[in-house]
Amino acid sequence: MFRLEAQNLSQAYHRRFVFRSVDLTLQSGESAVILGGNGSGKSTLLKTLSRALMPFEGDVRLFDEEEEVDSGKQFFFTSLAAPYLELIEEYTLREFFAFCGKLKPWKSPWTIEELVKKAYLEEAADREIKYFSSGMKQRVRLIVAIMADTPVLLLDEPTSNLDKKGVEWYRELMEEMGRDRIVLVASNENAEEYYFCDRELRIEDFK
Image (tube, rainbow, N blue to C red; front, side, top):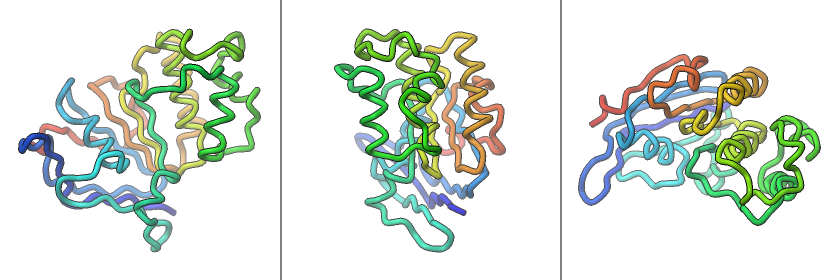
């Protein structure tokens, strides 16, 4: 059982608060959505919770049972998918999945071929990622995050650049792989992205 705790969490740029005084506790099997418009700070909150950004005030702590995970190791316990995350575009899809599997193990002993099929990108398996469409790249980001063996899963506008079939694919993937994890979604009021979430936070409430 893992537990993610944010206490009095605040973030600021150029002496202006993006959000302030966020308190949040989630355990394995629980999920929450951060709602807000474009530029509201929801992505910044998600990145701060992932420790990709250091908080201006407060702290983010992760516990395995009652033992705190060292802050320097939280990267290995957390997956983040976001449309702004860069991919290694010179790699083929097979090469990229092999590379990611060395950084963080997959949740099940998936082969590269199984991951390619899971993404429905078989025809592009040996193509360099720089030639992928925006929707194909988003599928790759989601596969890498959702299929990783991490107790914390952070999804920033996960259906960005996905067509209707892609959204259905995302829902199926979350039904299969999203259970028993701490899941946080940042969304611009798109219910397809967070239909499974137990709790809602509005970023405007923390201004």
